[in-house]
Image 1 (tube, rainbow, N blue to C red):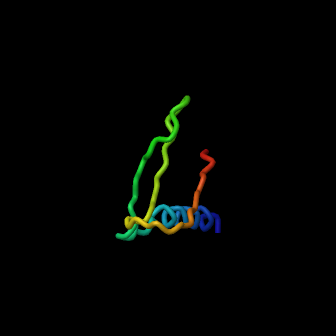
Image 2 (image 1 turned 90 degrees about the horizontal axis):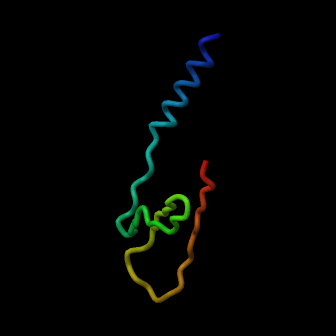
Image 3 (image 1 turned 90 degrees about the vertical axis):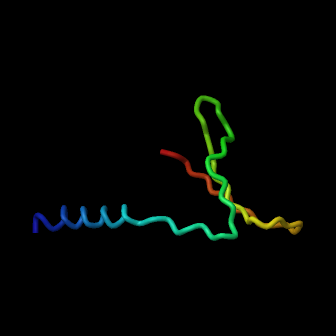
Length: 68
């Protein structure tokens, strides 16, 4: 029983680390590592947007990560 919890923790950690992100669809343009600030340290973002241009309004989702 003493070895069960450490072993289970290792197995869970390894399976979580093995997961990968899903591929980006072909109709999405991924612009990576765009610098938007450089005061004290470089700060960059990734932008994902539809490849096709549109004159119609589109919704936007902004995800901000607090760091750490």
